Image 1: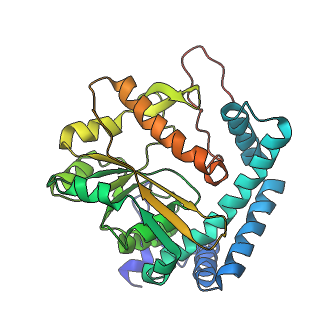
Image 2: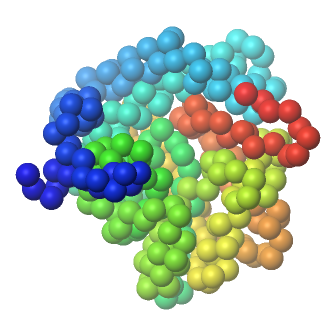
Amino acid sequence: MSQDDTKTDTKTGTQASFAHPRYWPTWLSIGLMRLIAWLPWCLKLAIGRLIGLLAWRFAKRRRHITETNIRLCFPERDEKAQARLVREAFIANGMGLVETATGWCRDPEHLRHRVTFKGQEHMVRAQAQGKGVLIIGVHFSTLDLGGALHSLFFPADVVYRPHDNPLFERFMTKARNRIFGRAIDRHDLRGVVRRIKAGNNVWYSPDQDFGRDASVFAPFFGINAATIKLTAKIARMTGAPVMPLIFHRNPDNRTYTLEYLPALENFPSGDEVADATQVNAVIEAAIRRHPEQYLWLHRRFKTRPRGEAGFY
């Protein structure tokens, strides 16, 4: 048995073999991802669309979360329009699963003809300062494919949340280390700061709810949302310019657009709420371009101000 075939269980401290039957479903999932990655483009996206429709039909808990998010964020839409956006979001995220498989399992070079990259001059200008750059990403369904496409133009590290399944974590981390310079655990603030100070670009997505202690409340689609303070803290500790990066699947479902926006101005300001509000405003504007492609399936408004009832 090789070292790669074992993983230390962090709870028991013992060595667990990835050949154990409990990992067989994970091996199957990895095998399917590798297979899907090599399918013809139209076929793989059709599979993704089917996955999304099945999830929309049967994943009742996630559908409730998505419906709640859409209702909160798009009150100007009537019920039919909201319901249509919920369905479109599931389809887009189903397609995102097969796009992730492609990004993780294929050489990004074979995707070059599918991407248009706008605003590269903003990154060139930021890099001319001689520092690393903090890249603000967004949890679109195309997130991991977007990372693969981005690697064709600019190198970057990525901050990520480790997966609870150690076998899938190994697979995912190896894939991301191939795409990015380094995959950094989201809890490793020192590692992020160290990499930026060494002149590396770091891709960081600050648009999820990480709880009260790590956040301030700032408006997001007109709702007070727990917004992490770390973006401004990293910028303050490193002096790095903060560059918003947006990316989406084009209407033809065959090509993609990446775009850098100008670096945030007067950031960080020293006011945590103002800084979080500025970040949220940039992310909200990006989402409004293609709202169906956002990851509405997660509980973005889980943490509420004290005394306020929960949404979910």
